Length: 263
Image (cartoon, rainbow, N blue to C red):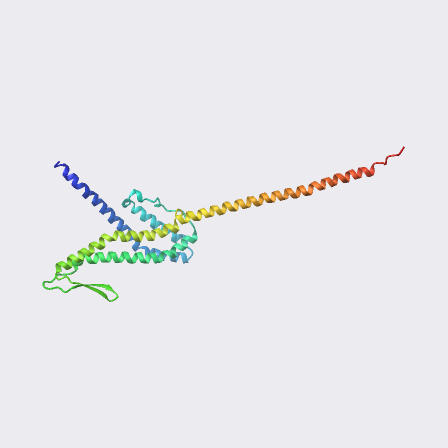
């Protein structure tokens, strides 16, 4: 029993460490994807303006596929969606539309990612950047922007450090959620417009197939109707004509036949 206890204790710790490593790796990859998005979005818009919308869409497809491939180890098997490869190109209009629609999404996700990383780094390094002084302390003031400030009545350096570390850990623990939401919004828009397996493209493909089927049926119906009309015209034209020819022949024979003599 004494020997089995360390194994029992190490199991949860080992599982927790693996989860922590996967979460950290995924957060770093997603943060890199979100932080570099403004550069690629502006480059994509320039490519669209120069008539190279295909290149812009291919770049974003590659980024999304690379993101999925790098975060595949951090995903559970139930979350796999099978869209880790480079998809087929669904259409030029969708490529150009994505380059325009992604700009506000990229801006919002970039701002939140930068703010969370900066807040976590600034608060966690607060004890290293400040040197506590003995004696009474001034209240800690948090500037919230737009002239708004909150005064925290923490009367000792230890409370200042504890508050900063607590706040930093809070930002750090919620950072994976922030990056996940940002990736879901940004990459989700890309998959909706650039993936031919998305629900939108499936719907469009279904409508196109229905249109082609209806067009083929219309052509077949018109062709059959035209053939029937030609056959009817031929019957109408050939039937009386043949009877008239036969009548003319009989009349001709009657005219050439000598009249019968009366006895």
